[in-house]
Image (cartoon, rainbow over all chains, first blue to last red; front, side, top):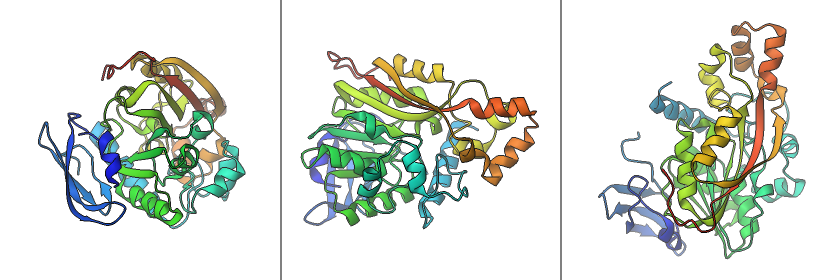
Length: 59
Length: 284
């Protein structure tokens, strides 16, 4: 995912803002990392460039 | 099926479709095998030949039931959200229209679909399209940030359609547009068909009565709701697939009932708008 799209993302459950942690990125985008909800504390992984923003508890 | 089972079943079935090397051929995962190409079905659904040529190879899985981009009147610089983006076909067409200054976000709950969509985006060099793994009932998108929400034959698969429309309303900017194609029904389905899993994942058993579908859009707060296209879903999309044909046969319908059933499955294109002065996040 690209950094400039972070501004319109939110937590799918409580709609709180997300804080990005980058593990790996290239010139264009974040490849591995996570998004943490400031409001409810839920954590969403970014794997192979795709943020997993399914509500927690979904297998 | 329970809500949880519906999601699992839909995810599993569309994951299987995403992993296939070749594209499918019409709305629903259960209607392949008609022998027609994705392109011939695409033209019948209202995509132009130019549209079909523009998107990267492999993006059009032929799973839609109409072309929402044609009616979305997208403009340069707009932000577009595609609910149930699948292989990314409609996202790429939207990306062409909103240009470099715009952006398109596809949300889909099937990881295999997103892998495929992302691969297609990379192959074609799109820099203004992004994909998110997410549920359309719980959109990971902030309030009042999107100019147009599009969706192509997906909302019928949701076990909570009211919530989908409430979420679409929430993320749209004041004055933002909802432009969706979907399957609806003009009469109740016979019970064996209504209970059929294969008819659910084929976009039929989960479909609402048309007035209920439009009622959910109104209840979410939308105005200027207009059905801008309506066609009976082509028979051969449904009955040429052996599993579906068997399910129809098992319902033991007489000829008149069978004809009524097939004529009651309708593809509609609906447009609606979030009121211009409304910065509320909706009822959901």
